[in-house]
Amino acid sequence: MSEKEAEELLLELKEKAELMVDLAYSSVLYDNKEIAEEVYELEDFVDALNEELQKLAIKDVKSGELELNEGLAIIQLGSCSEAIADAARDIADVELRDVELHPVLRESIMEADEVFVRVRVAEDSVLTDKSIGEVKLASKTGMWIIAIKRNGKWIYDPNKYMKIMEGDVLFCKGTREGMEHFIALAKGEEKEI
Image (cartoon, rainbow, N blue to C red; front, side, top):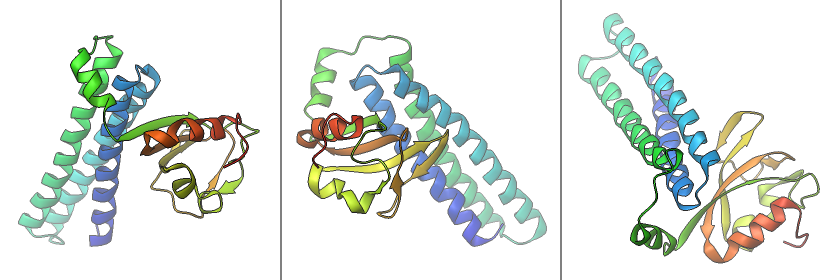
């Protein structure tokens, strides 16, 4: 495993773990089992990715491509991301088991400045077939796309050139004020960005 491959695997583990935490809290906050199930799906993927990273690190230590301490550091970093993913799964589990959230906890989450939204892009959405940069979502709605699920595949941290397609499931963060407008745009209910 090259240094670049190790870096890419660790970065993917980190990004997925971060996304899982956002999804898990959102599933509880919005009482959304579908989002909680996404967390479970991602957790399985993170487990497999971490296992692959560990095998490659051990193989490289055995072959002499990595020093023992380097291999251990890579394994520990991967394990930490995997532990975060496990914790996100535990949060999502609260939603899947229909555990009632304490009103104080719900209120504190609702008071957060930043919101997390999951929405499917409709065929007649003004966003369909346009790039993220072209529609200027962040500046016009206060929401930015952190991930896209397209045909069962995840696209993380999409750049401004990424086109939004019909049927894409967008995972976005942003201001509470921009949330309703953004959702209406994605669903095709509003046509003016």
